[in-house]
Image 1: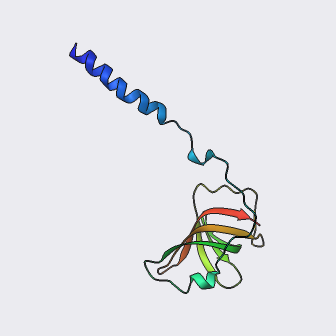
Image 2: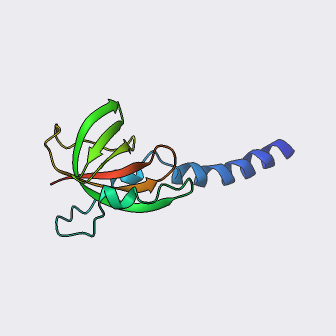
Image 3: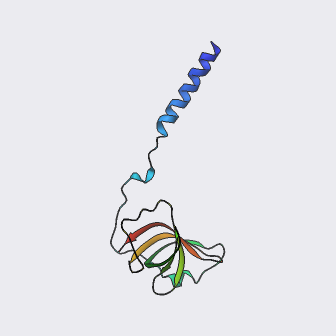
Length: 124
């Protein structure tokens, strides 16, 4: 009898938990593709602050001019170049090359090798 009560209590706790923990990806929602003006910053301005603990949100426009590995690129906006690391879940809408103008949304991090960790990329 005691085992039956424990089994029922366990099921009562686990069944609602399992039903809410589906395999749905939170990125399935449609993203807003706003193509209007946004406040951007130049790479030169970002590189003025390369402190070890510098972290700030940044939006930059320019080109990915060189690929270093599968998710790391050199980005140039015409003022300077900076290393960028693309988030693993970024999906490319189309093939791009070093002349394709893009807008990168991410977090700038200073330090020995300043970089932008890119959360989203938009083709311009």
